[in-house]
Each structure stands twice: as structure tokens, then as C-alpha cells.
Image (tube, rainbow, N blue to C red):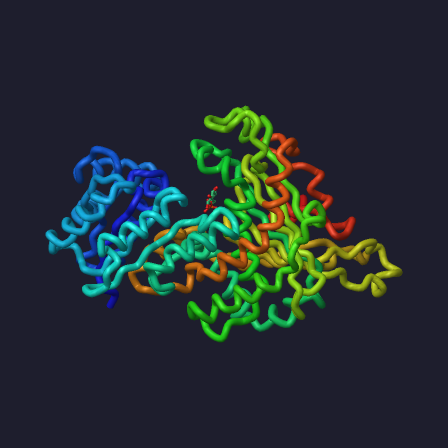
Length: 493
Ligand code: BG6
């Protein structure tokens, strides 16, 4: 039975808490998954009291929910919540927090600190927790959940790790990449390792290339202060997309167990061919959205969004070509691509198989046999295999069809990634969290690109909002016939 814990949420009045954490915790309450006695201590700078926080949380959850909020469930949830006002930068806040937790025996002695705060504050908050003996494990465990990005580049990630490593053991650190909490992402592992028919084909002998795409119709919204210093390469590729890449390409781990899984993921990242400074332009492409249309509505360019400097060259679109230099993948290009304000909201992994030999059909009307694709839709969820079949009729003509093996039928509910991750922290299960070496090797992959881009501050390509990004990104393709796969369906792939 899972032990109860105190979830101390730093940054509890911020965006992540509103949009993800509070709704996810409420869902866990509704599903009866929160261990008896679990409490939530919400920390914020605002001059609120517990009742005010609870009222706000009710609104946030209400806005997020697709169905009506259940009053009885919310009441039970609200009873777990307290608000603690404090300024993260002041030492006195931590001593007060210590006494507060000590004086209130209703708080379970196991404590998870959730850092839903600016990445620049991770180090100082953990140091202050230590100085106030709040990491002391004499009574109960202490775990720290760290949001992404972990560092800003390789050097800062190393520095942050050195700093927190003075106060925390690796097994106390839960580095979040919320993509790993998505059921569809976990389904990638099941698809690969629970189906005998895929494994023999999953290598360079049969696979022509792989594409991993995350496109969003949303723009930068109110996050420009964070995003303008970050950009798409750091925000999406260094973390979520490289994680997807490791799951698609890693060797079978010895068990579905944290260290075994993470060992295999790190091996993949270590095998990625380093991008040398003079080959950055052949491997990476960046662009920024201009004005355009999304769902029939005019939207402004990135430069005209609130809080974006007028001369910003921050990329809102990034594409990267990688090679994994190991026996399984040598020579197979892997294209990663992400963008904001694109034509569609979608994340997918598309595996393109090699051309079958044409010889057999040489005296028929079949002109070109298409390649098979396996499409793993992360959102919306879908799993399809495209195959060539004969058209009915007397002539030898072919067409494409797809075998559908989607994860979920329409009436099965989708859980949010954060629900699973928040529970895993309480359970002490770290398999869906990042080990430090994964983070470090992911930075090593993108660092050469970021370094060069940092020196090229005069110009960035643009693309109209609502499009699939600039045509020029095609320059990454290894073969003329390669093209971005935008669709999960057959019709206009
Ligand atoms: C976050 C990024 O980590 O992931 C955001 O900071 C991005 O910029 C988001 O929009 C995408 O997550 P999801 O779950 O909506 O695909």
C-alpha cells in the first residue's frame, strides 16, 4: 500500500499548477488514488489564505474539466489543501515552513517538493530547503520533483547538477518530462516489445527513415518571458522529442524497470553522431512564425506577441536530422521537427519502411509501389500500419490501406500525463523520470546547434502562422524523395 505524503508545491499559483497540477490531483482524488491522509501544501507569493486558494483551484479545475465538477469529491480534495504564503528568495520563508510542518501533525512525514517555478530558481530553492533542514530524512522520505528544462545548455545543466548533487541523492530527484507520462508514449514500448512481428523489422535493413513531429496551433501566448530565452530547440527537441527518439530506437531493456530502461535510453543518446560546428546547417533548421490564420482567425506574428523583443530571432520552429551510429540504426536518418502556430495540433512518430523491389510488377499497370509506414500517434492517439493491397477488378492495380490498432476506443477515458507522474512520485517509481545522464547526453546532442545559432543573431526565416513551416527545411532531407509526413490518415500523405 502506498504511503501518504505531503505534496509541497512551490509556484502553486502559477500557470503549471493551474493548468496541470491541480486538475491532475483532483482527478486522482476522483479516481480514489490519493493515499489516505495525503495533503497538499500550496506555496505562493500572493497574499491569499487557504480558502482563497481553494476557491481559485476550484475555478481552474472547472475550466479544465470536460464534465461537471463533482462537489463531494471536490470537498474531500479541498480538505487536503493548505496555502502557505512566502517568498522563495527569503531565507526566513524556509525556517517558517519548517516550523509550520513540524507544528501541524496532520502533514504526513514523507514530503515531495514540487518545483513548479522558473528554472533559474531550482538551485537556490533546493539549497535553501537543505539549509533549513527541510531535506532531512530522519522522519520520512524527501523527494524533489524538478520540471524541465533542467539547465539552459550543457554547461548550465552540469552546474545545476553539481549544485543539487550536494544536497540530494539521485534517487531523491524526479526530473519530469511529462511526455513520458502519456499513455500513448508508453504504448510505443508495448508496440515494440510485446509484438513479435515488429522486432525483426525494426532496424536499418527495413527502415528507410523515421520522423518525429510535434506541431501546435497555439502560439507563445502569455509565456514569452520564458519562451523567448528558450526557443523550440530547447523547449521541445532537447526534451520531449529526444525522449520519443530514445523509446523508438533503444534496444530492448532487460526489464520494464527504472534503471534498465534508462540505461538503454542513455546508450541511444550516446550513440547519436555528434554534429560538428560546420555541419550544423546540414542538420538543423530554425524559423519563426509570421502572421497568418489559425482556424479562420487572423493571428499576429511572433514578434508582435506580448513581451517579445522586436528584434528577437528566437525560433518557434526547429527541425533536426540525426543519425544513430550503432549496428541497428547506422545510416537511417531520423528527422525531428516541432513548431508553434502550425497547421495542426498533433504529435506523431512516423516510421517509413524501405521500398519493396519493383521487379515483380514490371509487366503490370503498377507504376510505383508505395513504401509502408507505421504511424504512432501520440496525440491524437492512433497506431496504424499502411500497406499496399490489390484493387478489386480485373487489372493489376494497387492502393494503400491502413490497419488500425489504436490504443483507446472512444468511450475509454484518457488520463493526463501528470496524473500518472504525480502518483509515481508518491510510489517512488522513477522509471518515467529522467536520470541525470539522460539529460546531459540530450544536451550534448543539441548543444552544437544552439552554440552556432547563438552567434547568428541577424536573421531568421519566417513561416506564415497556420502553415507547416518553411519549405526550406527540406534541405535537411537526405534523399530527394523524402518529405515531411503531416498526416496520420492516408488521403494526402
Ligand atoms: C511543454 C512546452 O513542455 O510542452 C510547451 O514547454 C509545449 O511549449 C508543451 O506547448 C506541449 O505539451 P503537450 O502535452 O501539450 O503536447
